[in-house]
Image (cartoon, rainbow, N blue to C red):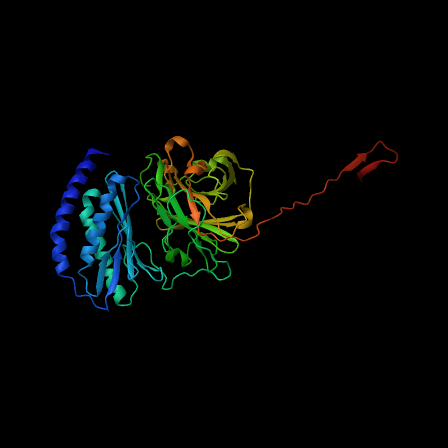
Length: 447
């Protein structure tokens, strides 16, 4: 750990202890008396997604500060949730969050969720430095206080700092598929599946479990990401660099979604980019061209049998150039595998977007409605020589998309019960003969 960060950690811990010990009694004294009309808010410790245990103390401190200051609001009863006891059943709202550190950079995210319906009411993303921690907390508390006040007024929170807005109705599972528990019975190589509305969980080792979300409405694969599902479902984010700075947060934000309906699995992403499109590297459209590897790109790999060694991968660049291949024994790519799938890319003010539609019939998996797959999501920002993934991938292992033993886990999928398909390619062989020396002469005579 850098010396400056060690010193900063010591100073922050010291000030934290002082501020919490001194201010907590005063804040508690301002707490309104509890009545039946109060809205109960549970604040969970913020999760450290940096995968470095020495930073875990920050999450407790952030949660303590948030809970203490929100406790002064009228009409709210604030409870500090613990990892052991979990969220109390009496809670109306739940505040969860994460934080990331890369050198001196720090990102804090927070979400307010309706415990009963699972609906996300507000989402906040704040960026700064470790030295800005207290200022970041002040901004975080202010945003959360404002969103809670709007909640009591029956309004939908809507602030410029808020990254994601939410539809007024929660997403319910479709009734035309058999329902299964997201917590699959297969032994998972990674953290426990996230509980809705969360879509991703990550442990201290950087291993990730993703929850696929069932669709009720039709998605138009046009690359625009204009459907309401992209506002109501929390994206998978916080990619981790493999190259050049192994284990640190990606420098460009990527938000991804894993969705499915009766026939297809959809992988969509919103890829933020800090440089103009003129600086992107995207100059290849030929399918399965290895030149695509040297373009800016977004990719997904599926280990559908969850054997942690074999799978398939799909890749696309910003102009729609596509690559698909089979992976055997964490290598041996076979680009001759050309399944049916559709992909479209688009643009938004801060970067580019992608929507992939992959039919279940293009994939092979266990004959079971309830599925657990391996999954890897990756991004290449070629103009920065940066590669990042949704799990921690050592720089020493080569291309991260092949490293299926370190891929994440995908749960919550409900697939068609019968996936046996046949690919029929009718063909005929014929020949014609011409012999001008024959008597009579033969010209284009069927053999």
